[in-house]
Image 1: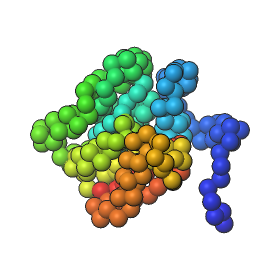
Image 2: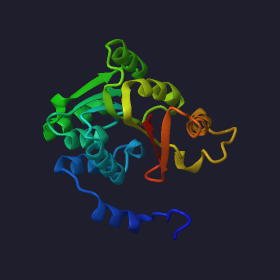
Image 3: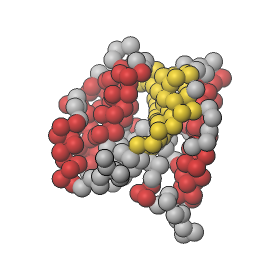
Image 4: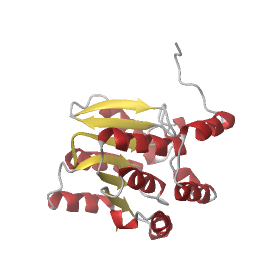
Length: 221
């Protein structure tokens, strides 16, 4: 029995990519392009993408909500996994980043399945609720500005169906959430407080995965 999760160094990360990740050629091209981007740290890891792909098949997901698109790898991954019947609503604030995303989505033939809203995510989430789409999503992925996670989470609890899953990324913030310091940016304390509230939330069943920068999975009861 292993008491702790093994640390993943560069060599082991390469091995995980080799044996545990299957990608469409456009996924690989986008991931490799983003690796040289000035904000590359915002990209999810390939094993996280593979996990989302597996989760889509487990849930039989056909409707996916994404908060935080960046260059589009996670949305591309899920759109491909859901197939032609799948539909994605994607939220981001950056025209620069999502222009890259659209280009790769187009190359993979999934652009028409992704409804991208370039505006504050809280506006898009409220629009979906006002449009009567509560309980209509199978899977939601929160990977955006950390101080707004509580707002995104509460909206996702309404938009995801019972039995659906909310995945929350970057819950570790590189380990800084363990002992937030006064000099840390507000995102660290915000994530610390957010993580603490999830464990006792009776509306969900929670599982924390030490994958990437940490991902929490929440099944809506």
